[in-house]
Image (cartoon, rainbow, N blue to C red; front, side):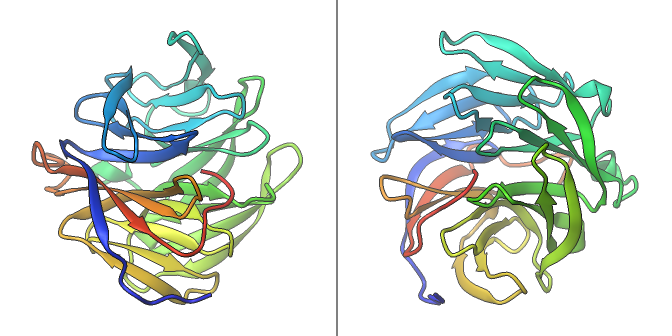
Length: 285
């Protein structure tokens, strides 16, 4: 269903740094403040607390089916796991796949984690050298895709059959079939974005994708094939988005002023915003 109306945006929390990786879990939204190295939990009334601390940039997270949190400690090349008692342990050593460049993560319904890698594209290296690694439930990591143009946000459809990857430098969303063992195949164009620069993404119950866009300061809902269905305009860069809330119909957006790769963001410009939408979230994250 297409809904081109402009929804109202409310501020859930403000005064943060570079905010990323929103994930709804149980009754709260969890997100990362990369400048502070904090994973923060916030409820719908704006009450927040620091849930975990890892001094790493990037610092992306997602939840295992058993309720433990995975954290990409990019600085160390490790995928960490937060145990129920709050301790952090190593879930996987990503250095067996690549030394650096680790970025975003999505965990599917079976507990397989996909972690993407931008190589050195952020510093002017080969823009098509991005990869995706699979971390299986036993913690073993292996590469399952390559040749991606700055892979950023990822999402898995509700039936665990398709991984969608945002290729920021190619202005497109790319899809892969997921095999029973987590391997990827049948790479294909899911949507060309006509100047859009996709960062974090999420999937809804109509198999449309919301993508966040930093330079264009917006979040856009796209259907497969490339037709834009809805757009949320902001006054600062949109880094990521996730659907959640009691009915999964709240679009949470992490946004901040972007000042380039050397300065990143101005202190205090990071916000978490909430927008009510008509189609609920589905799949992962």
